[in-house]
Length: 250
Image (cartoon, rainbow, N blue to C red; front, side, top):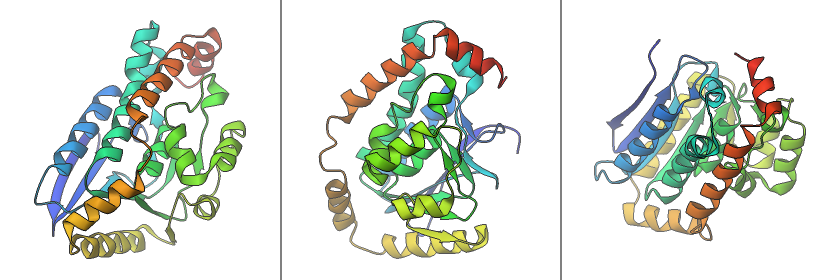
C-alpha cells in the first residue's frame, strides 16, 4: 500500500471504514475531509447498523497530524482550517446515529488518540500504546482534549499531556477506559471486532441510535468548542518554537 485512502465496505449490516496513509497513517487535510464525509455517509446508510473505524497497516493506528502540512501553515486562518479537520471528524463521530467501534492495531499519537476516544467502544491489541506529544512540539492537544477527557478523565489526560514524550502502554490505556478489551494478536482482535459488530447489528437499530444519543449527552456545544480549540492550535503552530521543532521531524 503506497497511496492514501479512505474506504467504506459493508458486510452483514456492518460498515467498515478504513483510512490509510503511507506515513504511519498520519492525517493530512484531504484524508480528514474524506474521513468525515465517509462517517456521515455510513451514518445515513440504511444498510448499516454499526460502524467499525480502523486503519490500514499493522504497526500504527494513527500518527496524528501530518507534520509536513503543519509546517506549511503560513497564517492563523490556515492553521485553524487544518486543525478543524480533526474537530470535524470528531464531531461527525459524535453526531453519527450509528454506534462506532474502534479497532486499534498499533501505536497511536496525538489526533489518533482523539479518534480512538471518540469511538463508542474501542478494542485494541497489546501493541496499541498511546502518546500525546503536542506540548513537546510547542502546541497542545486542544482539539482532541474534550474527547480524550470524556473517555479517560481529566487526571489521566493531564498526565499524558504533561508527560508528552512517553508512550503509555495499551494496558494503561485499558485501565483508564480508552480500550474496553485487549488482545494478544491482531487476528484475535479482528475476530472480536467482527463478532461484536455483527452481534450489535442484529439489535434494534432504533434502540442503538437512542443509546448513542445518551452516551453523548451534554456535548451539543462541541461544534463551537472544537472550532475554538482549532483556532488556538492554529495560532500556536506559527510560533518560532513550533516551526523549529517540527523541522527536526522533516
